[in-house]
Image 1 (cartoon, one colour):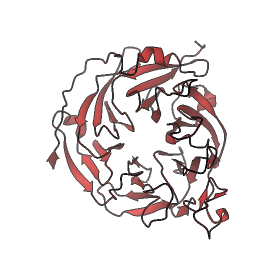
Image 2 (cartoon, helix red, strand yellow; image 1 turned 30 degrees about the horizontal axis):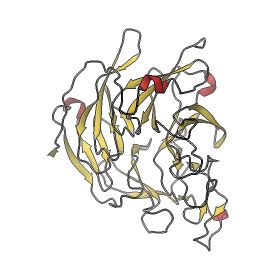
Image 3 (cartoon, one colour; image 1 turned 45 degrees about the vertical axis):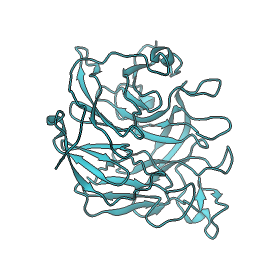
Image 4 (cartoon, helix red, strand yellow; image 1 turned 60 degrees about the vertical axis):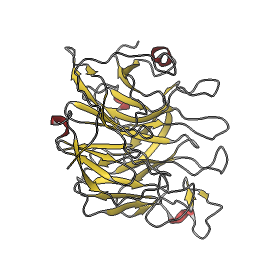
Length: 372
């Protein structure tokens, strides 16, 4: 058991929004457009490089990437049942791109590039966190090395290993793996997955749905990014030979797209889909129940930027369609973006959290019956 250096000083004082270095967050949020009846608020300010999120019993845990930190945010409920957040504090620092966080049976799991850490009984040890190394046998490549992790309905910890390149074929990469919580019995679950930074399971089915970021340098409009459905182990989704179910790669010949599992739905080209969640709450109108929300981080090298928004997809059984925008406004008309959505999380009251690694904030989207 190793004690990690920490700046943690737990407080239950409620967080007050502060002005970020990039501007007034309240003025920025006024630019976000959501459907009638929905509202977005600043839930937690100043969470630098906020990325993946997971819920403990009374704590929101947030990973980061370049910040190298994991944050803990105390949660409480006001007299009206509305969630409120305490001040974010640093639980761990100096880590290697600790993007992924997952919570199970009181323990917090954190994914660095090359290893998985476990903080046992973390909510009773917030002022003295210690970790064990679950595994240190993951590749150390930084390119696509930041990992999203989550526990599946089978109790396994799912860990992707992205391609260490734009497009290449290397054994042991471009896969989603899974293992027991103690790091044993590791195996490949899915292949041909270039870079997934978000996955979830369809309620009642145990079927995994995941985002995948397509290759670069085929132009602005190719290939599409993907929403994929993995109903069983052993499926291959095409990378590096096929992209989007129909684009054969000019650098890799010999295998056709008909050999692989096509995406459940083609998304926008280079929108960079990351976190996604089925809506399982009861607070949104019925038309949103069971739909998939997707956080689109936004293009980094497209001549006309796209993404920087939250999109919505209808799902019926194994079919997905009606891909559309739910919330947008992080990308401004001049092509500059003040924020980049990363991950989504549905709270017990049915509202939805959104992390933003550019602005360093976490937002809450909620619905009030009767409109604005």
